[in-house]
Image (cartoon, rainbow, N blue to C red; front, side, top):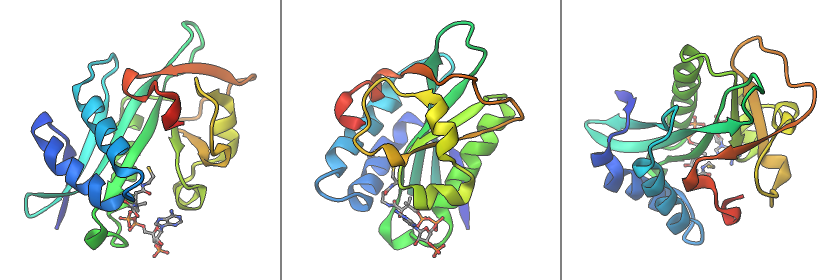
Length: 177
Ligand SMILES: CC(C)(COP(=O)(O)OP(=O)(O)OC[C@H]1O[C@@H](n2cnc3c(N)ncnc32)[C@H](O)[C@@H]1OP(=O)(O)O)[C@@H](O)C(=O)NCCC(=O)NCCS
C-alpha cells in the first residue's frame, strides 16, 4: 500500500537515496544537492515536497516550488521538479501518483499554473503542454527547450504575452536549466 505525504526535513537522507538510485551517476549528485537545497529554503508561498512511502520506507519524491512573477501579473504558479522513484518501484504508478497528488494539492491552493522541465513523452500523459510552457519564460536559457511544458490548474486564460519569472534560490542555477 502506497502512502503519499508531505516531506519533512528528517526525510532528506531517504529522499537522497531515492534520487541516487533513480538518476544516472552523471546527474544524481546535482539532483541530491537540489533536494537538500529545496528542503532548507523558506519561501512564500512555501515549497511543497511530497514523498511516496511503502511500509514507512520512502520510495518516491517530488517537489513543487513557487515561481515569482512581476507584481500585478495576475498569475501564480509552481515548478514541479525534481521527480524520482526508486528503480525497484518504477512502472507501478508511483510517479503518476506523486504528480497527481502535487496537482491536487496546488489546485486546492488556487495556483494557476504548474510547470515542469522533464521528458515531454512522460509529462504529456498528465496534461502538460508546450503551449503553456511557452507562456511562462524561465530565468535561464533552456538546454532542452522541448522539455519545458505546463498546465493550467483552473480556467484562467493563458497570459496574452509570454511572461518572465524568477524561481526559488535552489533552482536559480543556470546549469540546472
Ligand atoms: C520518471 C519516473 C519518475 C517515473 O516513475 P514511475 O513510478 O515509474 O512512473 P509511473 O509508474 O507512474 O509511469 C510509468 C510509465 O511511464 C513511462 N516512463 C517512465 N519514464 C519515461 C520517460 N522518460 N519517457 C517516457 N515514458 C516514461 C514508463 O515506461 C511507464 O509506461 P507505461 O505506463 O506505458 O508502462 C521514474 O522513471 C524515475 O524516477 N526516473 C529517473 C528520474 C527522472 O527521470 N525523473 C524525471 C525528471 S525530473
